[in-house]
Length: 123
Image (cartoon, rainbow, N blue to C red; front, side, top):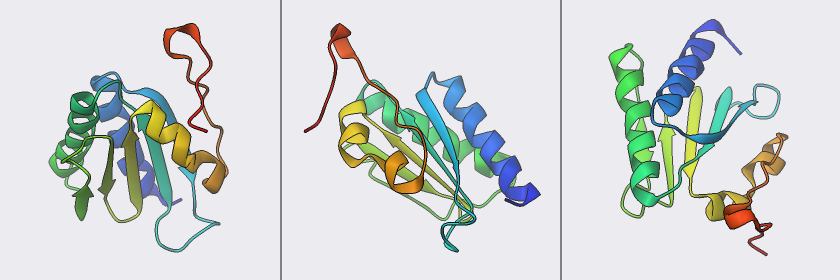
């Protein structure tokens, strides 16, 4: 992962932490694909928070001079993707994140969600 991508990652993670994202996972994908170098996956507790987290990532990246190519999923707020070229940020509701399990697909650690103290599974 190059230095610029590391800077983008750090800005994105700080933006997520500012609005209290949960279970932030950073995946280095340089050896897995040529499409992007780093993926950040995080969870929000509501549709509104998921949208706010993704928006904050886009705003902070732009404020630091990085280009945001697109954002997708703001309408529903269940899964919002921020595409910044070498960095891709996924912000999801826990049930959506559990169902799609991006961490397993890209070689990361899946968080375990325990809403109301009960084990959660989308299956």
